[in-house]
Image (cartoon, rainbow, N blue to C red; front, side):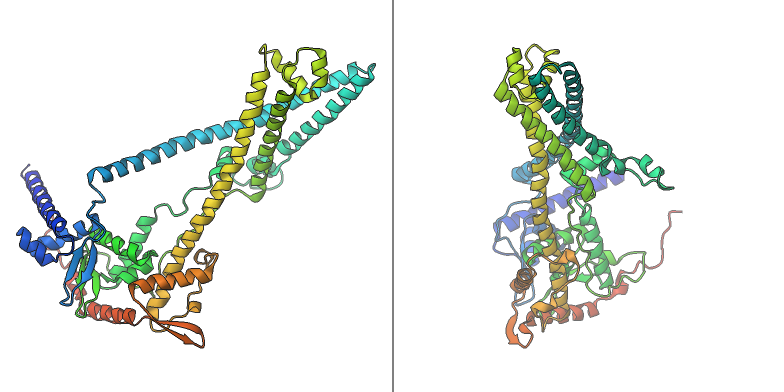
Length: 502
C-alpha cells in the first residue's frame, strides 16, 4: 500500500511538472531552451530534459541550434496537442469508429457477395435447367403446329446453349478443380491444400490486406538495432535512411521516437544535432549488432490477389453470366410486362415467358420480382463486383508507387550518406522492383531535392552528368563519428549483480 501511494504521488508530481513545461512553451512559442524552462518553472535541469522531448513530440516542436550550441525549441506550426483536447479525442474516436464500421461493413459485404455471386448463379442455372426441360417437353408435344415447332425449337436451342455454358463453367472449370482435392487424388499421391471458395472470392474483390502489417514494430526494431550498434547515437539522416521518411516528416518522427524510447537530442562541438539513447545500451544481450552499412528493411508491394489468373478469370466469367441474365430479365420485363394471355406468351421471349409462368405458380403477379429480384439486383451487383476490384486496382497502383518512392528514399539516402561529396543520378539505381517507381528518373530527382532541403548541395556538371556535392552532410557525418568516438559504451554496461531477490 505504501509503495502504491508513492507511485501515485510520483505520477501527480510528474504530471504537474509536465503541465508547467507546457504552459511555458505556450507563452514562449518563438523559442525556449532547457535553461529557459528550468528558470521559469523552478524545475531541475534533469527533470526538464526528461519532459521537454515529450512536449516537443506532443506539440510538434521545431528544433534549432544556436551559435552557442544550445537547442532552441519553437512551435512555428501552432501549439495544438496531437494527443489531448477535443480535436484529438474526436479524431481518435472517429478513427476507431471508422475502423469498427469498416470491419463490420466489410464482413457484411463479404457475406452478401458470397450469397449473391454463388446464389444467383445457382438460381439462374436452375431456371435454365427448368426452361430446358419445359422446352423439350413442349417440342415433343407440339409437332403438329409449325409455329409451335419454330418457337419451341428456338427456345430449345437457346436454353440448351445456356445450360451447356453453365455446365462447362461449373463442372469443368479450373475453379472447381483448384478447390476440390479429390480431383488431384486421382492423378497424384498428394493433394494440394485446397482454399475455401469464399476466401478466393474475397481475395478477388478485396485483395489480401496490407502486406506490411505490423511494420511499425519491425521498423522500430531496425532503428534500435542500429542505435545499439553505434554507441547509442543516431543522426537525422541515418534515421531518414532507416525509415524512408522525408526530412520534415523525419524531424517529427525522431522526436516521437525519442519520447518512446528514452532518447534526447544533443549538440556536438560544431553545432550538429545528434540523438542519444543511453537506456537502449543497457542490455543483457551483448552480441554484436554492428551493421555492414545502413541496411533498412524494404516494404512489400500490394498484390491484387493471391488467386491464380485463371481462377480470377472464372470469377469474372461467372459474374458475367449473372450480369447477362440480370440484363436479359430486366430488359424483357420492361418490354413484355405481365403475361396475361397466350398471345402475350407467344410475343414474349421464350426464357422470360417460361420463367414468368414458373413464378406465377408462387405469386399472383411475378413481374415486380422479375424486374427487381432477377433484373435490377443481380445487374447492379454484377456491375459492383467488377467495379470494386477495378477501383481497388487503381488505388493499389498509387499505393505501390508511394511504397516504391519510400523504398527508393532508403536506397538513395544511404548512397548519398555513404559518399556525400560525389553523387549523380545514376548512383541511385536499385535493382529491386520494390524500389523502382514507374518514373525512376523523376523519383531520383525528387529524392535528391528532398535531402537537399535538409543539406543544400553544390551542383556541378561533370563527365557523368550532374554531380551533387553535399559538403554540409559530409561535415555532419564527420562530426557524428567524432562524437561517437567520445561516447563511453562501457558506462552503460550492467555490471555485476549486487542484489538478488532469490
